[in-house]
Picture (tube, rainbow, N blue to C red):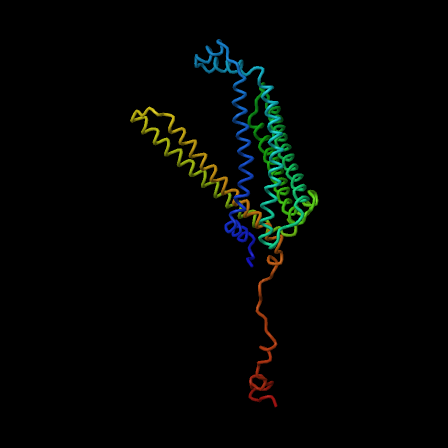
Length: 344
């Protein structure tokens, strides 16, 4: 049995790619619905705007001040309706995410636990109900963090009013508050996410799963930190690699665009489309790798839960067996009390 939960997690993610595909399926499904809602919502909102002849004339001047005034006049009266539509869409997407994430997370965690236990955890109904409440709490924590961040921005703006601007003081106030808000959100979100493991494994309710996750972190602090650290490093490497590939693609496309300009190629929209497509593929590849690392991290946590004795085994120390001690020849002269005399 592997005594390293990190290696056990990565080994499971490598040998059981179907679990990663299940994680990708539910995550990308929600993301696709969200992007589709944003795209079609933006189109519908633009269709509701009316452009008068004066607005068109101001936009045709290509003067920033006049164009901004025209845009302000076009958007007047429609921003409130767009804001309300955005709030309702965000609420609907949040409910969709809570439901789909609960079912998808149950499927992936059940497969991970079945790999280590040999049998699938029972009582799916109570586990999914607990996951729904846990994901609802995660959404509430994210909303609270967003509102807190907005409050920090308002406070920083009040410290530096327009009549007496103090950007340095405003920056010094906003950055620590934003860091604390991010730290609190990330910690609570991680704990609620970890609690889903105990909701699926033991069939505990939501708050019982949170308590079990807290006790688990206290009992296996070093092992949990090791898994989190190494998977975090792997995630950082994947992010750095994706950003490097994206920069290389942008550089190559910029060089190609310059060459097309020198050759007077008429299809100027082609490089832009290639950049968008290439960056989209890089983003999808990074998302897939990030989901794979996430499965490896949760598999490491599951290994710690299922095999705590493997982590607590002390190193074997050499011992002297009774047979070895009895093998000593007591008639050896060197064992006598007086030199040169053998024991009689």
